[in-house]
Image (cartoon, rainbow, N blue to C red; front, top):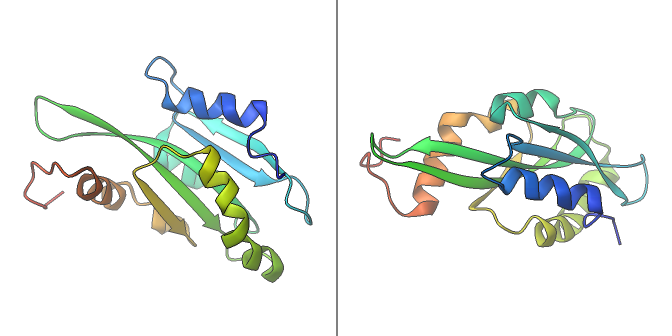
Length: 146
């Protein structure tokens, strides 16, 4: 068991999902250079830009983020995205294991509209992610123009 369902991770997940909490992202990292133990390493309230700045280029990490966007002047939507981050400096063996080990993280952080496989910070561009969330959500009031 990797610890993806630890009390700290579950509490942070609940905080990100809560309409009453300002926390809108979390990052889970590997606790050591080897092994598959996971630990909550960061949370924040600054959305995708802040989250992207906290990801470590030398690690594989998992992030969960709340994204709010307006469909029109009358409505606001909230969607969630799971980020599977593999930084450029991640060791080869860790990279190879992420596809298997990410399954447990997906089971714990299971309420998300899209999964983002990110290799560089530009993969977390908010405008592009909102476009993907609109498509995943079905209702697109901007005619696909995002």
